[in-house]
Length: 153
Image 1 (cartoon, rainbow, N blue to C red):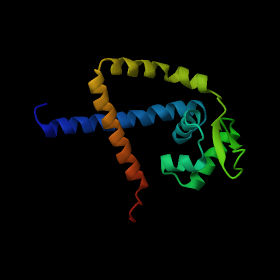
Image 2 (cartoon, one colour):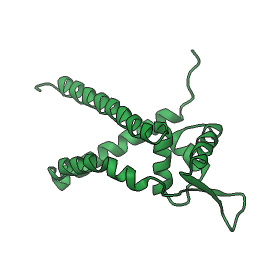
Image 3 (tube, rainbow, N blue to C red):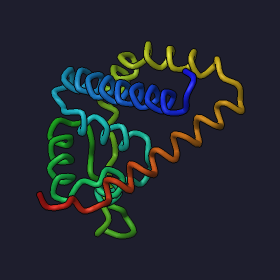
């Protein structure tokens, strides 16, 4: 690629392709558990983030509180999460993964994790710092976009 415009176009095309593949991949995995991709990603939050609340899920996903409540109801009914009251503040409720199917999910994602590790191992520490900064800035831009009020059509 000789020009900046060509390089930016190629990066944009790869990002769109990666996004599309990510959607298809998460839909495929979610289907195996009778979930939808949003359920699966929120289940991942519950497994990884301590002291997770419904409000925090709404904040991270830009979903409405009613949508988060419906999502948590689905996951709780299926035994994937539990809601636990904070013993010091009964108004606060934490969302906790039950661990159900986490081993199976890890097995499903293992080949992708291995391939991703191999790709990352091919970069220097400085290149990894550059990639991390790029991803952090994209994450911030996505969060800003999600937080914006949609314009009426």
